[in-house]
Image (cartoon, rainbow, N blue to C red; front, side):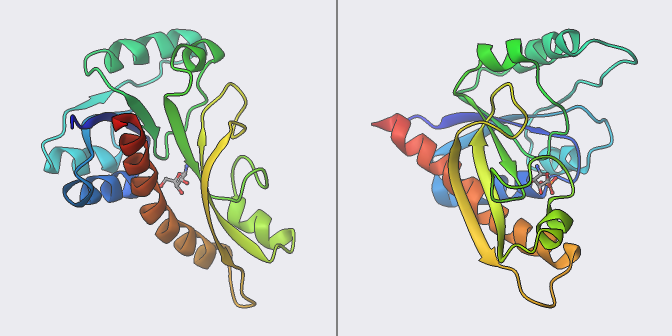
Length: 192
Ligand code: GRF
């Protein structure tokens, strides 16, 4: 069985990237063929280099239209033919044209139980809303921000002593299990 070829897109720390890297030897179903960042100082780039994964940085230029950035991003992606694009803390909204071009092949992980709490500050918003549960969602990327069809979720109860920080920690722990598992499932389905 050929490995699913994955490009991971990041902007920062890359702990989800690390989880995907760490799960590769066990899952044996996917390979990360490149890591692309819009930020040159994203720590995730170091994580990729430590595992000899090719990296690319596509930094946005001042005043650059979204479509122009996405065209340059597209050129960088084309250097490494891939089956799946995995957004892991990639802090840019992709243009409708880009998303349509890769329809059904871009996924994102979001730190809330979508459709609740789209956007930022999801942990504090879950507390403010008095939610009893919180969690994380893997979903297809479509033109609407955090609106694509849901692929998988993992949830946990919110406890009385929880703060935005403790929820963030719990959410990350879930993400690090869920994302490699979804990519593995994707690879398995494709193999049949
Ligand atoms: C994660 O919490 C993810 O849900 C959100 O961005 C964060 C990225 O964290 N989209 P990391 O860079 O993978 O540590």
